[in-house]
Length: 337
Ligand SMILES: Nc1ncnc2c1ncn2[C@@H]1O[C@H](COP(=O)(O)OP(=O)(O)OP(=O)(O)O)[C@@H](O)[C@H]1O
Ligand SMILES: [Mg+2]
Image (cartoon, rainbow, N blue to C red):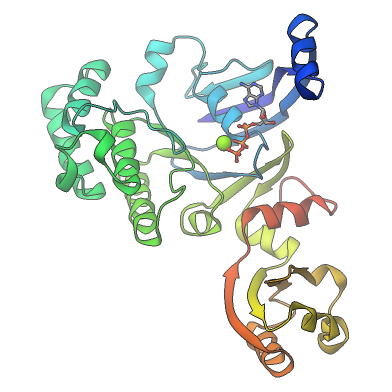
């Protein structure tokens, strides 16, 4: 369905000397530097699959999505979706795909949402019957009714994201590209969006590429993940396999009477851990400990902390994707499981 073969994208970036003098100098004498935003990546996605496309900030995710949607042309390599090349036959191609860039809306700011949908209906040439059915379906899944008559600029972030998702799907695309569709949303709206994505995928067999920094998105939605770092592909496989390979980490965040209390604890000897199983970050106010819960249970960790430190506040969280990327990057990584 989706084929990405040895794709590269270079950007030319102006290098500026420091200070005002430097800025003026670089106006006359421009020096360039090449940024390898995407550096030789290959992967395939099957029809009906939801692929999690993850990596740290600046890893090259959005640049890849832009090449897949035909907004950018690869410097090298080939992209093919459903037998089409995104930058060629653009008119035909855009009918088959839907795109959401969570960081900025694609809706018309001053138009009421319902009119936006009518405009999109015309752009995509959706016939009346299909449009009616589609609006019913999207309304049900994304609960648009309450704000469908409001201008887009008055919508809350959660409403706006649901509207953006709906707009990307008016024409029943075969492939959906969702670049951070849950960014900045509260837990309830995140769940709502996740359910909508699941339903669309199940009912219409839509192929979905999803980028996110939220591990919960990945856990609830994706059978498979592709991870990139500094433009290079560093993992392609299941989430379960990745956890098995790199440890199943959790994070304890706490405030202590005095952060230095943590220094007198000895996790390695007490729990017979290896260095790679635990890492501690300490600031004046907070201590955060991430540890491999396959080696040390959360219950044992909490008991030990409660006994040996004066805790003012504590919470247990999933580690974020950046943390996993850091761990993977510090180790030998095998691509393809
Ligand atoms: N138009 C551009 N011109 C120059 N450099 C660019 C351009 N677009 C992206 N880059 C650079 O390419 C690299 C990858 O950026 P990209 O936006 O793809 O990252 P990302 O993985 O989506 O990050 P984030 O998680 O922060 O959204 C970054 O170093 C970025 O500064
Ligand atoms: Mg991005």
